[in-house]
Length: 210
Image (cartoon, rainbow, N blue to C red):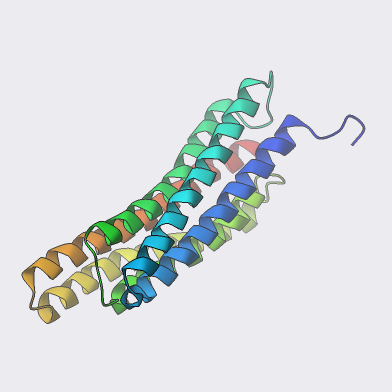
């Protein structure tokens, strides 16, 4: 470019780095919930890593806000930028909270339902990579197709929550474990909801740009 990178390029780059960090966080959460039997030292190490990754997301969020504050005009409306990074940041924050919950309640013995939930989260965050990348050169049809897939995954997560709770209540004899795992499953469903919120904001932005 004749005048170097624009502030819009910087904002887009931070968006993409943020969602990349989110995908890695989702994958690490799935690894954690798959391997709970590896012991407290393992759990503590993974949880700490997820906390650090949430801090990375906070840094990208702060850098976006700083860039916006230094910009007279941005291609995307400043209010939309704020809404989008806020919703993106909530995904990583919810992932961190799940990890802290696991450590606080010392959950052991991975449940297949929780791992399946994490699989949905990973798939949704990977789809969000395309949604966020699409903000640079909005292609409404392509983004709508991706958003439709995210919508289906969110509905799948809702159904999974109820079927998982039914299985939990039927198969788990320990009342304390039922309460602990119920809380975890509901928190995982909140992660999928937060992913869906990102798409809602992104679609609204693309519509304005198209």
